[in-house]
Length: 219
Image (cartoon, rainbow, N blue to C red; front, side, top):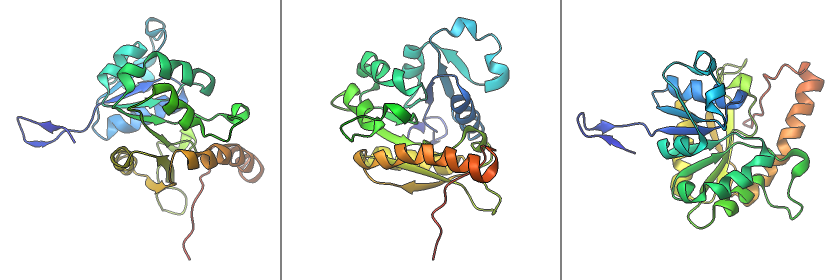
C-alpha cells in the first residue's frame, strides 16, 4: 500500500473509474466516503456539467486516459460490448495496475466458455492484473452494504493475481461488504451466469426492488 511520506501512514490507493453510469457513481461515492481519491473517466467529460452534484464534489472527471493515469486501481464500468476495445486501446496504461472488471456479458457471453473478465485480461495482454468483482451487486445496494438481516452483503470476486486479489478484497471490506473469493478468472464465468439469475429472482421474489443480494449461508 502507498505511504504518505510526511505522516508515515499508509495512503489509500487512488481509484480511476472508467464510465459514469449508476454503478460507477455508486462505487465512486462509496470509495470517496472511505477516503480514496476518485477520478472518473468519460468519453465526453465536457458534457457532464451536473456530474459532481451526483458523484461528489471531491471527485474528479477526466477523459478515459487521464482517469486511468490517475488511478492506481482502475475500475471498468463500461457496457460490456465496449470493454475489450477500450482495454486494447489503453492496454499500455492498464498493464501492471489492478483492474477491476464489473461488467456483465449477458447475451454476449463468449462462445468458448471464457469469462468476460478473461476477455478483458486478454485484451490488455501480458502484465494484466484483472479481478472480476461487483458483478453480482445491484448499484442501489452499494450505499447499503448491510442487508435486512443485519449482515454485510457479499461481493463475489475472482482473479489470477494473488496480490491483486488481496487488494480488491481489502477495497471490498473498506466499503462495508464481505469479500467472497470465487477462484480464478476462468471460474468467474459462474459470476457472469449468476447475474441474469439474480435479476430474474429479484423480479419474481421482490418486485424488481434492485435491493436483493446473494448470500452463502452457514451450516
